[in-house]
Image 1 (spheres, rainbow, N blue to C red):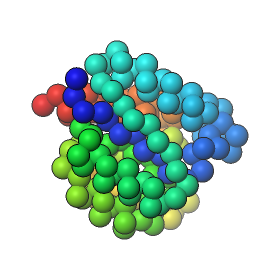
Image 2 (cartoon, rainbow, N blue to C red):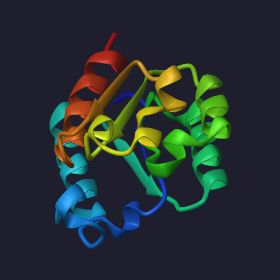
Image 3 (cartoon, one colour):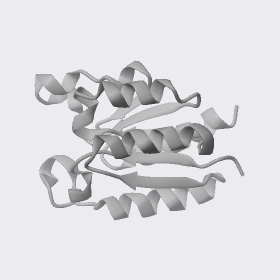
Image 4 (cartoon, rainbow, N blue to C red):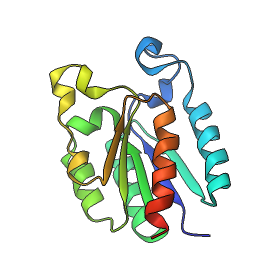
Length: 146
């Protein structure tokens, strides 16, 4: 089995299902983690699923993935638009990176249209709700299988 895929989630995603359900839906982050675990098993992948409201924790997990991970799926949440530190950490990772957003950030406020993470990501999935994580896992299977 290949090294695990790190699935990293940024600030406020711990409130998924409670915070602005009209935008983000009613599924919880635990629901997302369970769906990702089930799909990963079906695809022959293993995952490490993490969430933090702290930028440094996300950077630390990206660093950990350098040695222990085959790829990174990241929903950086608000750090998408602000974190050069996360971009720099991702640039030090040699495997594939996919960026996921639950909402379609391009239909929202103008400040959400810019992503530092997109400068490093092989692909961006936005606007497919929490199903975007599963789409990213399917794509990651292809990328890490090469």
